Length: 161
Image (cartoon, rainbow, N blue to C red):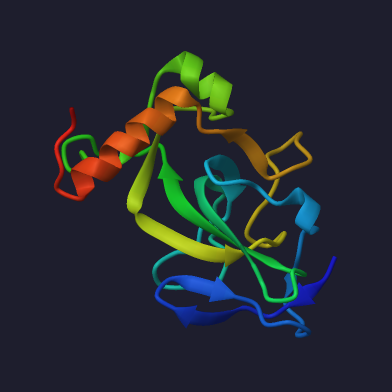
């Protein structure tokens, strides 16, 4: 696996330039797809360039390849078991036990749609759960996708039919 050092590019986005030491990249064949759920060491606000101290679920929003198609970045949304239903009504909350099992989530999860970062697809940020070989734990199912699409409309100030 290749290594490169992360640098902040804009906003909350991290990108690792080619040829520098730092990150241990996964092969491109292991890339997640949009709406996959991955196990991630999501960075903290005070250290946005470093892997966070705790692994947690993250929802993949987009995947980007560099110009040479040799490395990738993954845009992910923060997942937490802290529901905050009263104060975060426009976040994606997944709580149905059947849906959670189908998506590979161990417990009810809220994806904070305002906390999205772009990270290098590397071992330092994306880790397999214990007993697993891939950081990809599942995929947002139909009910989750439907809820996410509704939230997108509501967040833009639209109305749901």
